[in-house]
Image 1: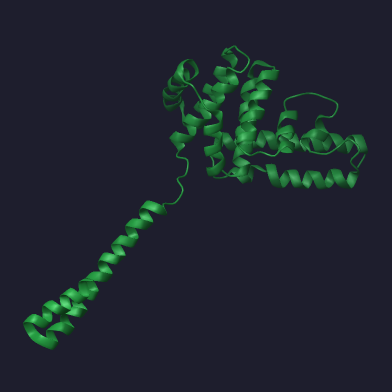
Image 2 (image 1 turned 90 degrees about the horizontal axis):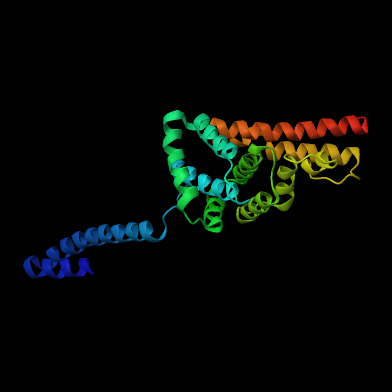
Length: 245
């Protein structure tokens, strides 16, 4: 539109040469305005999906932790101490203290939507990182030496919102309960599994749970992944002894 108006304006002053110059000048303006408009539309309608910032992740992790701590109707000091120590290791004492003050507020006063928080994390976190979140929540529940049924139910609910496969949830859960089938559950196989099936399952678990999968996260989370990976190795070694291979 501008190019034609500029051409007419140029023609009125300088006849045909002015029309050509006006058209060319107007074309440049048209392209500039069109480019800005497209950029604006891209900014509004095609923004890249936000990632979870460290501060935002902390808050959401604390919120999920509070749901697990309150699941059985009591707030265990051992569980609170576990969370505080976890954040001390991750961020240092000063930042952990500030974070813990927020945590106390969350536990006492806030209504929390597990579905909303977990669904957002599901969209923005890698699968292996979401596995580590569930391991962290089980570790909190186990801080007082026992994971209660309400706590298991709450963590299972969060795991479903995070999009975890049932077999992966059961594998992590088995790491916190002693039972005759524990090694099999951790490796996600049946008691009737053959030696070749056990070996195959172990290789698959190594790929899934290896700490290198969490190199993008802070050291404390990698340490948690190492603990989870160690349980996988222990389960495999137990079956090696039982089966004699």
